[in-house]
Length: 265
Image (cartoon, rainbow, N blue to C red; front, top):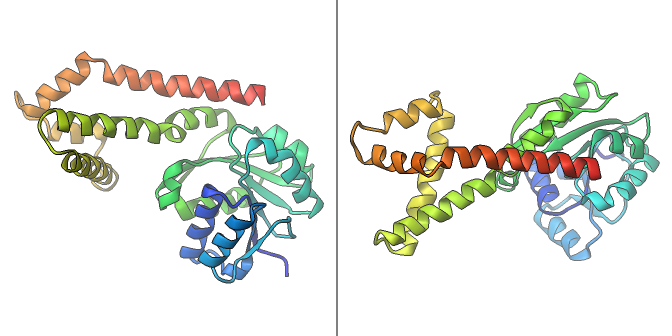
């Protein structure tokens, strides 16, 4: 039987995609295969998802997700081309469409994707870009796969560097902010575990409010900022420390680094 989907690479992101697809009933376990060279990891995936085909070699499939490290892309693409897999969505970081298409061959439709680590808990943000022969149907197919673990947007490939700078690296910026909030709570007398719980829930709740209220970030910030109040004092300190500018610089620096890595790859 030809598999509906083959995931090449059963690491954290590949495993998260499989879990999301099965949870959403995108396919039955028997319709999805995972290629994973590490025996222990194969056992873990098989135990977690009974009926899933987990193997060490590429199999025939109607489509594949390339979820390997960039150094392993050439070998994985050769195996997929040999198995005549007709379309591939790649989440291999830093590997451009031109390189993927060259390795896979002219008769394979390629979509490149940039997901982020919150996909591991089903709350990711990903962007996809179409290769030279990918159709709207190929994009819709790739969209349906990444949507199993979060939000998906469509962009042209040159914008994937900015996506990397914003949402790809963005979780690290958020974690740094949470670290600082926890330390600030401790500095002002809170027990560390109390400060950690409050900071984490504050970020989680704020993100949900932003996503679900229908209001923009500026509106919500203004709503919680009373004239002459505590929030106004805190925001004044942040602006004086150029926090807004620092975030702009962080995203720009990460975007430029992504461009550099793409050129060197």
